[in-house]
Image 1: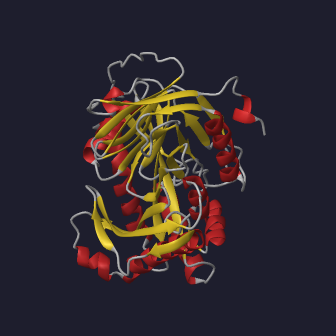
Image 2: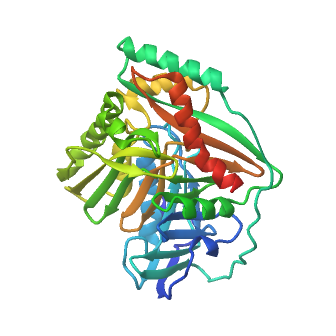
Length: 402
């Protein structure tokens, strides 16, 4: 593998502190924005200093890390901030299924960031001014069925329940998609602004046309410290939380998800703290059982190494993993693309934050493909799961419609 994998010359990177930049998303230009924002803090970027489509297959995360190492190690970096997310940063989106093409990594030419009251600007190459054009709303939105109609998806859920009660597997997460067509080209910035405002607890993201607001932090990596927020078990916001905590179905679904994260992280960590019981995470549309898992890595693993070990968790695939993936391929009748795959950023130190791409849409021109998924157990009711999926789809419908 050649240094910088085909780049004509090493990247020249400069990071400097700046005064408070205000609303990060409002600073984004129109074309190909990159974003990872929560409670107003995070990173936004634009332009492309380096980028790659990651080859699909089981070794994709190792390939991605090797590509990033070649870029970052060859770079001439002048970093006056030295915080996670300063210096060169790559935004990434990986497909849910390792056999699906479309995983991408991009090192933006310009990154604006804010963390804990400190703001900074990273530029690569000659600094240029990108014109921030007015944000345009998409106009009237028309919806149509995705891969399956509502009735067909309910049938898929019923089939999954039979597979579970028959002993083939314990849990599977089934996703459905919805197609939205707008009057004009969809400006991702309009969606990002609405999502960040309405769902500040979530991680609002934009990478490679995939835009959303995920509540699920797959992993935060700072030095050797890691943190993961596991979400599984859902009810509508406003429902009695006691019903969620007392639900055998939701509790077992959550235990499966926490166990999969614990088992993935344990070989990488010298210490690992797993809560005995979940807490409640309340969002405007739904509420989740949530467990925050923390640990300390035993060696110099990067955030991508941790992502590779964790994906897919039971929260987005099922249990056992390989059997759940087989059932997903049999029943969903679609390629999820980046939905439910890892999305986030990594810096030259190997630090970063990656979430699971939930509550999102893949945007192409005037068209958006919306996604939502539900954890199916032996006690699942197809009509109830459809109602839950529709509640989750409301996140991106709001982002499109306002």
